[in-house]
Amino acid sequence: MKIPHESQGVIGREFIALAEDVVAAILVTVREGWALAAIDAETALEGEVVMTERLRDGMRQALTSGTLVWGKSLIVALGMESRSAPEIMTPDGRTDIPLYVLEVFLRLAEHDPHAIIECKRLDGSDTYLCREYVVEGVDRFCSGKYAENHASGFMAGYLLGGDAQSAAAGVNAYLGRVKRADEQIVRSPVVDDPAFWRSEHARTVERPAIAIHHALLAPTSGT
Image 1: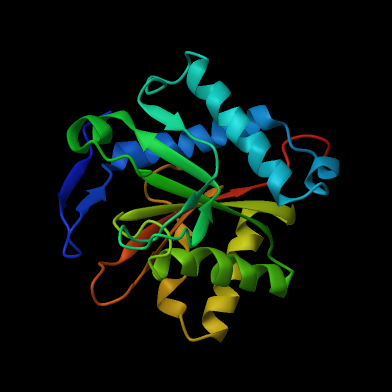
Image 2: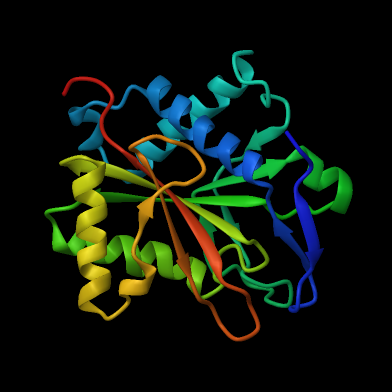
């Protein structure tokens, strides 16, 4: 992978803008890890936490399998309490799947995660889950609660029904209802896969916009 690009952010921290091939590597690692997780409909009923643990384990297995050329360049960490800004002493969030990129650490010695995957259940026909995907997922990146010094955020949507196309339509319908149509998600320009989508969102005045890469993941077995 190419070394990610970083520049000094207006908020006083090194701004981490991952190169496109690093974003692609993260998405493909999610895809390969999800296949190894072998989530079926019954497992999905056990809840979001169980699916996230299975996904994390699958991603680690994919990275150590020798089949991904960037296997030694990414580290998949455990979920952890997090602080949205260095000056906040009490954790105000919990990241589902934090990622570290070796090149970023070698350049910046940045000990906080270099990318964050927020995980949510999703069904395009369920208006409540579509709202929660935005309000409790997307908007945590918009507010700077997560990834406040990152140019990119990542979300995994665990599909409880329907496919990625219908899930995206459900999320976009919610965004349209709340007059945020300009933030709607579209097919990913980074990796050509029907599961991958992208959206862009404005944040506070002090922070630049953030691109969110979505992996909309259907059960991989027992369907």
